[in-house]
Image (cartoon, rainbow, N blue to C red):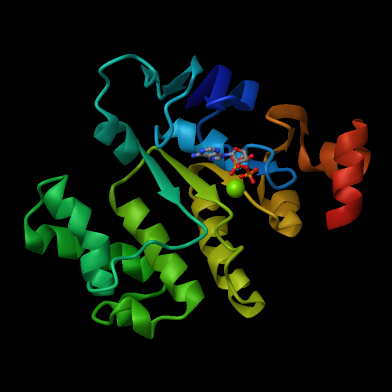
Length: 240
Ligand code: ADP
Ligand code: MG
């Protein structure tokens, strides 16, 4: 579903990604862990072209997105992204936040868009918040709206960049539950996270990134119980 080959990304003189190659199968859940500054966000942002790779190629569902003149907006519809900070529109209700792109980008009628938005809000447990503004939502609820907004576009893959890092601890669980539900229905997901419990229990594969490279990868069992690389072992000793 996702193929990344020899991905390099520099910002000026700063080389941030130094040759990343990864394949993610349909329905696979891949967690990316690693120290701050190792390039995890940049990696995700390259997959939906929020950053333009310096070199290397990326395919999503067989479409080469690193082709010149590609329709970037179409790629962003195929790869839904959820950020640490929810980026909801503050002056729009929950329902409007979720249905807006369906109307503007997908050209659905307002009625159809709202129907689809409500269905998805029901799935993330927020149907009753459809008509409130973000200010009236908790952090966990806001993040579930952000997930619903991405899902409304019916993406082929979902990319999560530390979706629970900005939440109060008691709200982490409700967001991880929604992500777990998505994994169960077969969504292909790449999740950058510090939630080692989620990585261990939900992911099929864990990538450990350090200094712009994938230093080690394997099943959660491989990484959490039998890490081989010194840098992985040192990182895990600090976070577990
Ligand atoms: P992580 O998500 O693992 O913490 P990032 O991908 O955010 O790492 O950042 C990796 C490195 O790239 C950092 O040194 C960061 O300062 C740098 N970086 C990220 N985005 C930019 C940018 N737009 N311009 C310049 N440097 C950037
Ligand atoms: Mg980051």
